[in-house]
Image (cartoon, rainbow, N blue to C red; front, side, top):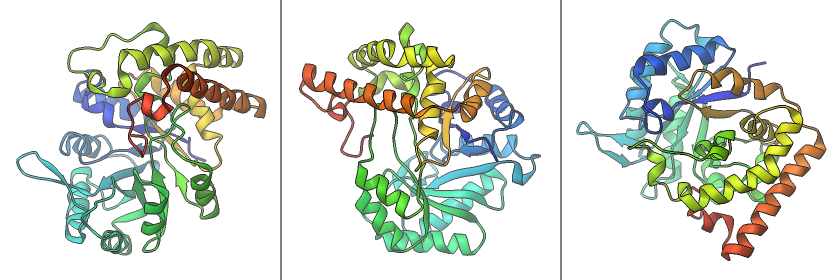
Length: 324
């Protein structure tokens, strides 16, 4: 069975930590060389730059040695603009462009990046079904959806995966959503699982972001968010990780992999040393008591935010109604 910790490639663009193309390719090679399989990307990562990078890095790899996810629903223009469109012709064309950049005949999973309010879901799914029947894509997925949108998409196609933002402190799925996933054999593929570093041991030391780091512009990365989350991790999460002799990041990854509506996860990095550490999370078994302790820790976190700031966790972190 493949290692269930995948590689998210958005950081390879250098939007957080600076990284060269050669070092980015080394990250991919290190990932595959250590038993990794699932790779998540999108054409909007640098206007096709990361798809091009992966196309070169994966060129000589056996096709069954990796599972490649990319996305549609946004159109790249020749003058480096992006606009949302999930119209039939745009989905077909953008998928073809992605396959060209990736040097692949098909992708294992093709995902609608987010709903297009100007295109009927039936039209969008008709394009994906066409691509699937033509052998250009395997699994169909959608992203950044609420439950009603997911149900609407699934009227027209067999959606296998949903990629929503989700983490130990971003419980973006209510019980009804979870039940629907389980009842219909749809799996959640969480993104921002480690909250771009806030749910790792590095958060305890405080971050000094380089000039140009995208996190400096994010509402959920302001000083107050960092301080409150770090204090909570130090008191409630770090002791659990220490007791298990694993890292805080590994604990968060293992926690996600123990959720019965999750098949695999994707985690990004710009440092090779973290690849084997991340992949090791797949083999960490968490007793039920630990899982309960982590859920209790979140309830405590939620209570702290409500009491002190008179806001929900979502509101405190500056997230929208879909929690991103």
